[in-house]
Image (cartoon, rainbow, N blue to C red; front, side, top):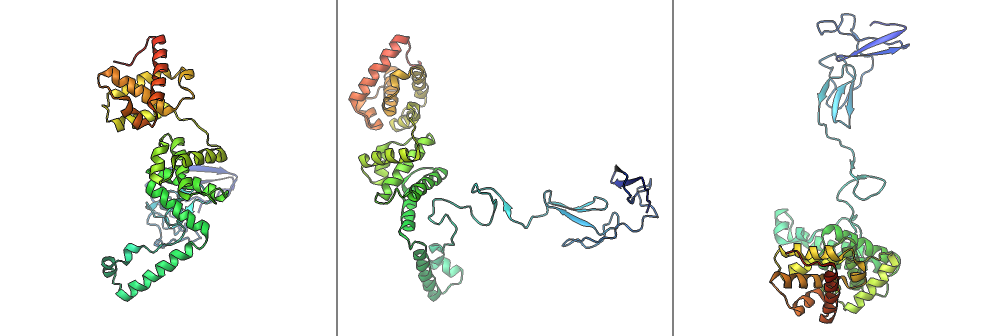
Length: 353
């Protein structure tokens, strides 16, 4: 040991750190890379880890530490790294549910299940004959587990609100035809309405359909009211009324833009992809003139643009054909065409040839 009352020099690998005014020992190395003869007692404190109880092969100290961030086991005395990529047995710190506690075990919570996925479910597929045989379950045990599964399912839906959530989530998963992430948002919106007491006395399918329409509109994946009404087996007038009520309650007022319907309509009409540039050109011309199209049905404006582009490109479609896709009347279509053609004539524009 070499002591100095004014300063201490600590050699760690090839770096030198000088700490003035502190009395410390120096574990110095000689010029040949070996330890000094005087440096015989490296550390009086013994720190061991699981699997690391032997002295360090570099300096002879038993002073191990685990860096959980880097996943490394190192010697505190000389800095030698003896193990890398150590697995962390602690909680998985993954933010999945936007909560304060990010630790979790198992699958993330989801609004598409009535219990948000917190309960354990006995899968019926594990109780069929083939799976049960592979797991070595006898027929008597299989009958017993089926009985337990029924009791378990009933115990989770004792309250009417929980049963309604199960039914609504089933509607959303089976009939919304939305991506999984948007189904999650629809289920969350439905749960908010249920917590406010709005669902009581109203159709579960109707409220779920209204939530589906509003989420699709907010995420720029527009769905037409007739299509959603057919998917959820409810009347269009009833769905429109529920959409107005829910949008007012949750302050989700927004206006769809006509260009959001161009691609779906063109797909249903089976138009060539090259036609899209012509329709988009027409839309880019009339878009700044909001007095022409603002306040009109966005589906009707999109239908008028497609009809005009088709006629000018040499592949015309009938008004009835386009109106059946856009769910607007031919009178509405012709009125919008007159407005658009009047504006284009005033500007001297046409579709992009």
